[in-house]
Image (tube, rainbow, N blue to C red; front, side, top):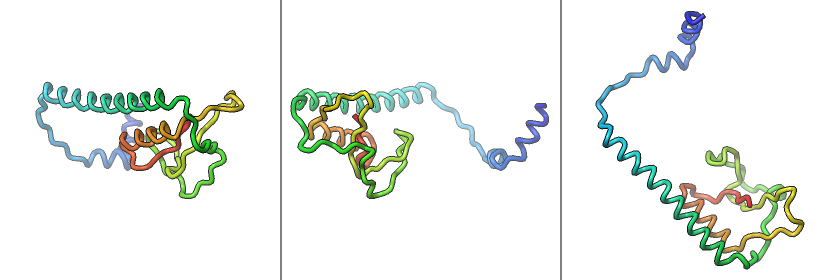
Length: 138
């Protein structure tokens, strides 16, 4: 059985491409690699933590402020520009519109976040490596 499987794998284009790759071995300094990795991970968490802290401050400051216009429900948005795949959300989204997705059990008169909070969420999205604003789902 294993011989058959090995034989079948050698006939796959992926396996042939993999077999054709050339590798160069080089020594790695484990301490340096760990320090570099730790620094990178620390920075990613630090950036996200700071973004959440800024959003928290906005929410606390503008909690009682209503938006000028209630956001459109996502199911009612007219998509003007096609949908773009977002790897973070693992789905296609409209990067030019902002909308809300309400739960079926949501209050009949839901409270929406203030314009200031929505703007901070847009900035947060852009700071975290996207150049456009994704759909906000509250």
